Structures are given as C-alpha cells and as structure tokens.
Image 1 (tube, rainbow, N blue to C red):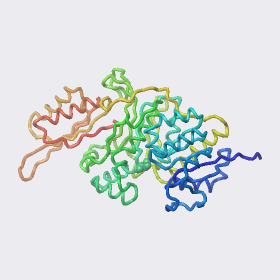
Image 2 (tube, protein in one colour):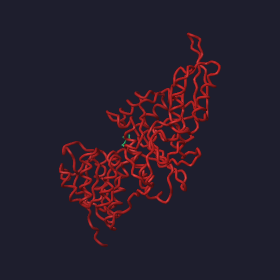
Image 3 (cartoon, rainbow, N blue to C red):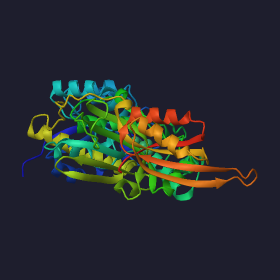
Image 4 (cartoon, helix red, strand yellow):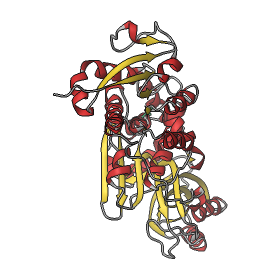
Length: 447
Ligand code: HSE
C-alpha cells in the first residue's frame, strides 16, 4: 500500500466544539486518513489561556498561545475561536499561505464573507463553514452542491435552538417569556447574556449565509431584517394555539418576483429580489417545522424541481457541531490530495436584497374591540381599502363581571399581501374609535 502523505492541521480555539474536534482527530486518525486519502496530523491548538479547563483530556504539548505561527505552517486550519478579530486576520493569513480553512464562525462569515471568499478564490484554497449554520445538520453542502442544478425559491429555518426551546416551553406549559428563558438558562441552552439568541442576531447571521448560498449572491448581515422573540407573550402563544398555529422564530430567505400575480413568491410592490428576514412567525400546527421541539433545529427548503425538503437535527453542542467541522475538513483534505480548490459556492445570481416593506406575508392580528353594531364592517372596510384580503376572522365575546360591559376579541388571519400594505392596515385599524387595543401582530407562513 502506498504511504499516505501527511497534512498538518492547526486548530484555533478549544471550547466545547474545538475540544471534540481535537479528540476526533486524535482518536479516529486511521478512519480519517482512509476517508481523506491523507494523514491528518493535529499540529497544534491555539488558545488564549493554556490553563483553562477543557471538556476533553488532550496532550499539553499541543497547546500554544501563538496562533499566528501555528497557521503559517499548516495545510488545513480549523477556526473555532468565534468573534471577528483575531479570527478574521488569522483566516486571511492562513489562506494567503495556501491553507484550506474550515470555520464555524457564523458572525464572521455573515459580516465579511465576501472578503474571505475573495481571498480563498485568489489563493485557490477551500473555505467551508458547514458548522456555522444549524450545527450538525448538513444543510450548506446540500444547498450549495446537491441543489445546484435546481432553483431554490424559499428557505424557512429554525436555526437557533435556544429560542426554539423557549418558544416550545411557552407553547407546552403556558409559561411567560421570562420564565421560559430562565429555564433555558438553568438547563444550559441559553447564555447568561442571552441577547444574541433571543434578539435574533445569531439567527440573522445564519439567514445571511443560507440566503447567499440559496440565491447565489453574497448577502451580509446588513441585508437581514431582524426581530427577536423577547416581546412574544404567553397570550400571543395561547391565541396562536387556539387558532391552530405555533409560534417559531424563523430565518426566512425567499425570492420575490414581480410577475403580476399574488402567489407565494411574487412581490406585491413590483420589486424583485430576495427577502431575507428573521422574526417570530405563526406556522400551522401541521407544518413540518411545527413538529421541531426543544432545542432542535430544522431547515425547510422549497425548490422548483426538488419540491419541499426538510433537514433536521441538533443545531448546537460539542460533538454534533464537531461532526460538521470534520466533514468540511475531510472535503478540504481531499481537495488538497486531488489538487485544485474543490467545490466552491457560485455568485452568479446577482439578486438584490429587498427591504422588509417588500416582503409578502400573511398577518395574524389580535384585536380587543367594542361589541357594538358596525364594528366588523368598519374593520373590514379598512382592510379592503388597503388591498388586504381577510382569510379567517374569529370573534369571542367577553363580559366584564364588574361593569357588565361586553367586548369582543377578534382574531384575523390575512391572505398574503405586501408587508407595507399590512403594516399600513394595522396602523389604520389602531386609529378606529371602536378598537380598545391591538393585542398582537405576528407574521404567518405556511398557510
Ligand atoms: N446559540 C445557538 C443556538 C447555537 O441556540 O442555537 C450556536 O449558533
């Protein structure tokens, strides 16, 4: 048997994912060599603190604080430090020195993907980041490679496990957001500072990456409209449940074409391009994504020829995310063994990112209204004047025990219309004298 060549691997960062990657490189060396066609030698692990506790016992001699020297001598660099700097500079240095790079750094790829890709193209090396979106789930490679002969029309993703856990907890127990968040923190899903997860920033980075690969155009974080879940109340969840919906934080990327009609991917305002957004969304309880519970992730892809596909699995955690890193590493090693940079993403789509006002969605609107003649007519007239068609309207009467005054709770689900028209309708409804309050306004998908 011919002797396999050895490729030097530099690992940057040794948190819960990095430690598992190091363990796999050391424990599964024979298997990895047979898959890659080269021996993968862990040359070193760059960390900030040599004495920090690790999830896995690793040889002390592998550790260094000198990341710059480590990357300069590597064939393959795995960046799992997170953050923008020094990760960005180290990745660029590695590629300029001819190394292929595997990263799980969604924030960096979403913020500065174009620069990283340009450098990878210039250097003729592979840059891959499967671990950056939805942890263990193979989703970027299927979108980039398996579906490259098809046209993706829409991607709906539950790509943040923390928020899915919180919303699922609220749905199954009736808990308020703050209590569900505390439970997520107690179980270790949510961080002490949960902002990046609950305000949708983590999902927005992933949305930018999913949109870029799906629509063959480089989108950045600035192109993503983002709303988190901190304002979703137990009452919103209960009302949604009562109407047959579940609330999920979705990362959505969809192509909108001005073809004059009003189907699911046609822009209502004449704009064409891609709407990339993250927001709490009502989904019918029978939608496949509604069955994604706890901290799991799933991505639902619609393509012209493939139809509907769903990818499901663990979106975080040391071992699951390390699995995605190793897949990228083997692919990069094979590209070195076989010659050439391997498969890269294409950017020939050249579609523009549309503002949120161009998005086409349905709305769920909860209203507390006076129970008197003509109220429904006034509300319906405003919807009609704004060109928004009502799909479902349900009314429940409440009687205040003390005052004996009756009020009505109205729940309206609209047909799909432009976000601008829907927002203007809600503003106009708020101004009606018969409205006591607008109790919720949430976007709906999958109807
Ligand atoms: N914090 C993320 C989540 C995992 O809750 O899914 C890393 O992106």
